[in-house]
Length: 253
Image 1: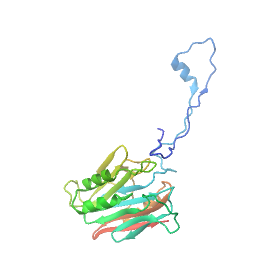
Image 2: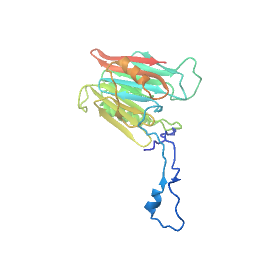
Image 3: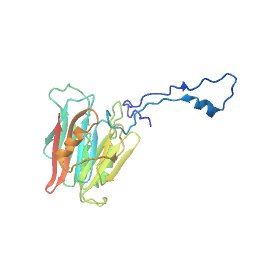
Image 4: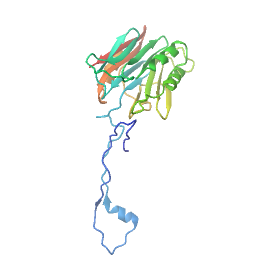
């Protein structure tokens, strides 16, 4: 399968169909169409969208009922870091970053509430957390906030992605604690309850899919997604459910 260029990002597929005749046809011979096709050997080289080596998926979240993580991956704005504050983690420019008026550079990527921890790639994290704290079902807090803010209005129609870890006191879930993941793209809004680690990214992997996360601890989760072989890691945040509530951690370059 040829990979596609998603949201304006360059695809990974290469190659075409340079046909080389296998035999030289006699001018007097008549051949059927299948026989003519058999005289050519197509050569196709491609990389599938499922390969991870040298793949740029942009920002991504990984969510499960008891642990979650968020990673900033960026080619355009690499000079950023994650700062842990009281009950939240904020992504922002480093001291040596160039000035920019891009509205999508700084935001809270993680916020804690009594009913769950919210992770995501933009300003929608705040209304999701606020709605969750007010008693909204996790599903509704995600869906309403993603719909309200919509995909990012940049050159790539970048999706907004988010998840909630450790959901409790929610009659719509099938387990407690529970996890939810969601995204809003130009063509869809997806919100799902998850029981195992699940990833959604802004490019290439822009629908929820299983992800191998080998920890249930916040710092290890942040480190694992930061070190993942997806390209252009900038910083990461992790969160996990503990007996006292939640634990947060950050990893920077």
